[in-house]
Length: 281
Image (cartoon, rainbow, N blue to C red; front, side, top):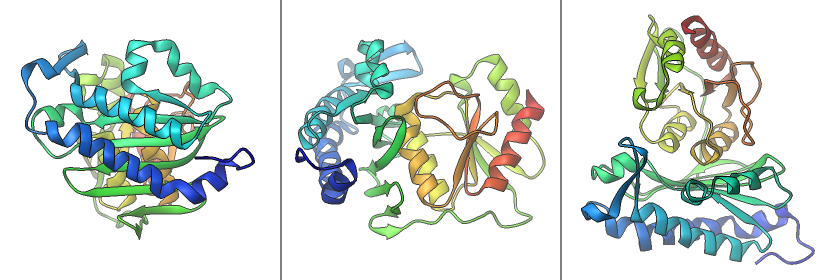
């Protein structure tokens, strides 16, 4: 619990592992018991057949909301499922209080299919600045943590994104066609060119982790929901990578970004991806 005189930096110095433990416990209590065990009544659609939500999403978010606000009194939670129920709650990202940005199950379609490529993402921000993040893939037993100015780690080991190997194809994960408009599809067509190995993305959180590990050169995403990007953006940044929108500015977790945007292992790669997206528009 944060003390009255404690700053956010001091809180993080004391409680990074406590947040990680809360994320692990949420997954152990609410997600993994339902993995490959979901009944039909535990899966619903939100905006359409490609936008799924499960009891694991809802219950894990409730678990994390209670645990995280107890750790940091006065903080608020912006979670994917709570915002779906009450869109106005998204505005807390712009407020004065520290905000936990939560995606309880990123990669819900994979989770529903019984595939291990899903994760839980949590980020802590204040005044639009990302301060720390946690990405936990329970079925893969991977946990990545980033603290602004303190670097990024995977299972306790430092992460460095590095740079692409000269002459090799750029591996780029982009917005899945199921989630893109015709205009966005046209922009993404720029990636269909020599020297680029493009594919639809899976879990956004795991794609960001792949960049931070140097296993993927870049992403190209056409949506900006904070819970899908906040944790991963900071992880990539603290691993030495970067992120840019179509106007060449960094991605803002508070929104109003020029889309699509990219996160990449280094700035040269990010700018190359943006040039390709412009060619496709």
